Image: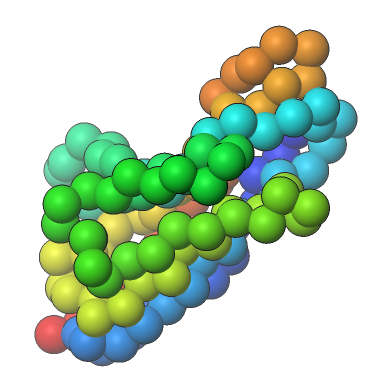
Length: 118
């Protein structure tokens, strides 16, 4: 059994910062790509940022220069540092990780709410 547990969401004013964390636990053999997605009300879930096991990163254009994804492989944890937050960043943020137990499978966290007030 694998679990992804997110933390760090909350309410912040525009221009502020938040740091999200997502820790994977369970019978993990290896973790490939880890990432963050978000979903605002009435919209589809969208990619925010991903990071490979080797540390290569990719970001949505809307967050480039403001958000930074990182990971600690020893702790099976991925982070998302969010700076210069805007009201349009308001969404539920979900952690995703491609984890091998017997074979590789994508796992999702439960989501954490980020609300940016203007």
